[in-house]
Image 1 (tube, rainbow, N blue to C red):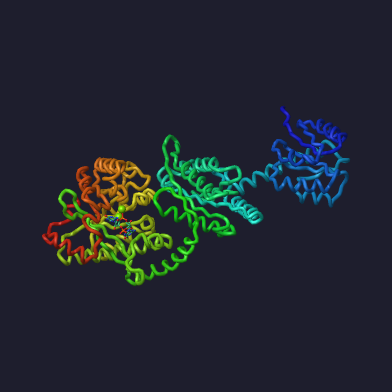
Image 2 (spheres, rainbow, N blue to C red; image 1 turned 180 degrees about the horizontal axis):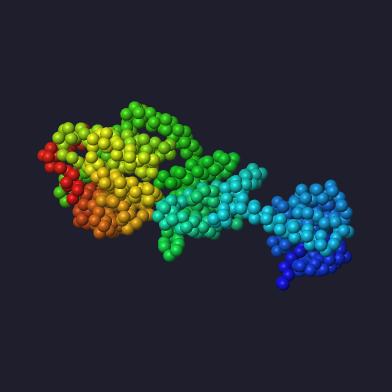
Length: 577
Ligand code: C2E
Ligand code: MG
Ligand code: MG
């Protein structure tokens, strides 16, 4: 049987005792002891911290004060090797002090026998291993092996202490992945896990030795940058993080893409304690997320005043729903071939009593964060049903109304049955509606949304893919959904005449969509040149200021009337083709 080798460091100033100890250990039958002797206590700490020993024997007799200090230093430096103290005789006080300072156990030198040495050493090693394993489990994320929230909090506290002493600034980065949920939903958790592991590994490569990365949530990471001398240092690292995450991942032979949003809180400007810094980095992260694509944002004092604003807006918005301050505007969708109105998109507005007419960009993110998307969405559907009844009463030919529906609504409990009951109580058929869903929203909850869509489609409701070209999805991925229309995002449409890339992207998207038998609507068309480009490339419909801005209900019905909509020709048949 092969003997285990136990690499032993003996710290002891007395050569005779070293020789004696080496002899004793040699006699242990079950293990081979490989001895390293350190005779000078001045070099002891360095030797103790080298992670090459299995056990350290520290002779305590020589200078108890020095030894106690050594034990403490070893422990604060994270020494991973168990330390046994050697004492001359039984001295309970000294033993207790040594154990308290971090020793695993002690051996009394003049009572040494082979069996007790062997047992004590074994215990110490086994116990240390178990302890290390436990500490690892408690402080490290089991999936990625990088520090978890607990260890991160500890490191943040230490960084704060150091910064307070020297007033050296440090930066806290809050990294949140964009599009991770969709990878998880479409490819499964195994792939999601591998992606997280890959990201953790890349993050570790981005940072300097003095910095640390932690995983603090499913797809949330923090990075602590110490001793940052300038804002530029921080920006460089933030940008590097964005770049390495943006690189495609190859998982099980498939290419995966995710983006990231980073919020940055710098000590002391963004806070002097851990809670405030974390909160502010998180706020800045949300700001970064609010803009398309991967971005970083520094926390600014303005953001906290915005948080106060958001609180006020939450209260006001709840009241607005009840006080009927919300309003629907209507923007026609026009056929590029005939120039006739083929549909209309209903757009939400808030007639704020003090601030005037607010656009969705002014209040949707608040609504989202305070959980008002769902009630607001039902308000919209109810209001549109009553408008549809009014238009019918006015003798206007039935027209399909496109309504924006967010993912929060789709995943809300009883979404489908609530839609059905609103339609039936207003006596409006499902085929009067098209639901527009943003590409990124669909991908984020593909499975649930697909199920809901199938049920609603049977009611006659149609689906359009909104803001296409702004997310990570690919058309084939969405092919199995009952979508009939694709809306090209205005960011591409508005550049078709000035930017070759956008022109190519739009051309390709129209081509792909037609291959899947989808109708294509170009959003945000503002100029004659854009319209000409779209006609040339066989885009089907146009929506934009070029034809009409969003109109009030009265303005819109007047427009329909002037277009001769009362001629009983059904708009539905036009759209349905
Ligand atoms: P969307 O669904 O992509 O709506 C198109 C947006 O483009 C509208 O902005 C519209 O006014 C604007 N737009 C149309 N033509 C032009 C143009 O030629 N040039 C420019 N610059 N803009 C144009 P709006 O009304 O501010 O709505 C913004 C977004 O808010 C909508 O984007 C939609 O995602 C969301 N939204 C609007 N109403 C609702 C709603 O009732 N429910 C939900 N969940 N979201 C809504
Ligand atoms: Mg829309
Ligand atoms: Mg859109």
